[in-house]
Every structure is written in structure tokens, then in C-alpha cells.
Image (cartoon, rainbow, N blue to C red; front, side, top):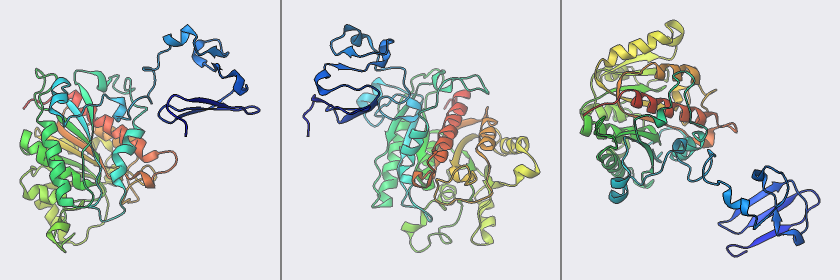
Length: 394
């Protein structure tokens, strides 16, 4: 093993491999051939001359290695600044208006696990994001709002009850900080990256604490309002899962009876599930309603349903057809395309969105083109754009 700061060159006929023993960084594929005796020179493409430069060349000091790349530094959502929002000292000096929070949790699923890796996957898919939106000509990440990535909440996978307590507190702390632009809004809003869908319950508890009851716009192939007696009835512990959290949110008084599902198509367990769904305050837009009525009808129906209430938007990535989002735990054929979903979300501009999430992303089931995480990242940016477009005062 080489010590820190060592430098070696392996000579090859037409390929050079460098090992820089600084943090284990390897640089390879440099198209230049020379022997180890020439180790005082190396290939510098940014000197605009395309020939070897000396290590002590003074022009090397002028090279900018900090800016100009989407892929440098820590991997945050859309390359946003990282802030340890759980640290009183750091949060006091780095205030924010909108925070991105990862919820790496998947032990409340009834299908395939893997969503604990969702926050990392979505951040990977978001590295290309930035600049002005082609449709709105706005750069939501650099408008009036200071937006940061708080990293992930620390969640155990061994005890769901403890994990939910941790996530409840994480939301409570992040949403309780003073904002950066308090003349515009005084309560920070949160975009959560899931994580299975049960993590939305902690977010709804947080929004209720700060904003009161909200109308939920629930993009999902499933209703997720099942009674714990129907789904998970073997114990109280099992009763809180990714298919019952909206039922529990209703029972806790967190949401209005003006909520709505969109993109629904998954099977129900019992005929009485429809009645319980209505009791929990939800209307339904099915996936096939887009064929019958069109996108404009969907947008206007959602807006009419929630009215002037404050809104929480939750997007289960399985609202998309598996052709567009294979990387999820309970995929259901017959869903919407990525373009259709983004058009619907963008059409909700003007609503008072006080929180949002993108959940159920399981990168292990994604394809090599990262279709799912790219879609989830774009959805996340659209949700942030809605928050920026409509500041909400407390």
C-alpha cells in the first residue's frame, strides 16, 4: 500500500495508469505514453496546448478545480449546498427556506425492499439538474429561496418504532429553524427523498405542527389508506406500513377531507377499502382518466378538490408505468409516462405547497440507464419549483 502523497507511473505501450495516493484517487486512461523516468511531467488538458506540462509549471496554480463541474464535491441534490441542519451552530449561520431531507428507510414495505437506497439514487440522478427550465424560463434553485440539502436522517432498520421517532424529530428540527428570507416566509419547507411511503407520515406530522391540516395530493398507483386491520393486522407494530400511513394520518387529524389520489390503478384488498378511502377524505383520479379526459382535466380536478387549502404533495414513483420507472418496490403496469406526470405537477403552480416528497425509489431494480432515479430527480425539482413559485406565510 502506498503512503499518502506517493506518486507512481506504470509504463504501458499506449496506455498510462496513474495512482495518486491521496485519498485513494485513481486517474486512468491518459492518452500519453512515457516511462517511469519521465514522472516529472504529466498530461494537463486545461493548459490549452495539449502537451505535457511540468509539475512545477506556474500555470498549474491558475487552474480552477472547484467550479465548473456538476460532479465535484459531496453528492447533494442538484449540487445544492450541504448544511448539517441538525446542528444548532451550523444551522444558525446557514439559514435556509427550503430543505432537502433523505429518509433512507424501507422496513415497512409489503413488496420488494430497497428504498433505503432511494435518497442516494435520487441525488445521483439529480447531478445533471440546473439552469433555466425550458418551459418556464425560471431557475428555481436560484430564485428568492435559499435551498440546501440536509443529508439523510439517521434511521435504524432494526426497529420501525424507533426509526419513526427519529424521523419525526428530524422533520420537527429542520422545519423549526428560522428562514433565510423571513420577509417572504418564516417557516422552512421540506422536500423529502424516500424511503418507503410510510416516511410520509412523519412529514405530515411536521406540516400539521407548523401549518395545521393539509390537503394531500397523492400521486400513487395504490390508495395507501388501508386500515391496519386489513393490511398489517397481525400486530400494532405491523399496522404502520407503506399502505396504511394515510389512514393513520386521517385518524391523527393531520389532513383535510379534501385530499385526492392521482394515477391510481393498483388492486384493492376488500370492497370496503373504497368506502374507507372516502372516509379518510380522498377522491380518486385513476390512471386511465388521462385517456378519457386528458391532462388539463386532471389538473383542474386536483385544483378544484384542494381549493385554497394548504397542500402536501406526495409522489410515489410507482405512479409511473414500469417502462419509465422500473426501480420501485410495487410496480403496477398501466401507469403514466414521465412527461405526463411532470406536466400535471407543473400545472399545479399557484397552490400553497407546504411540503412534498418523492418516495419508493429502489435503485437496485433500476436499469443501467438510471431511468427511475432520473425521473425521480426531475419530479423533485418540479416540486421545489412549486414551492418557489408560491411562497407561503405561516
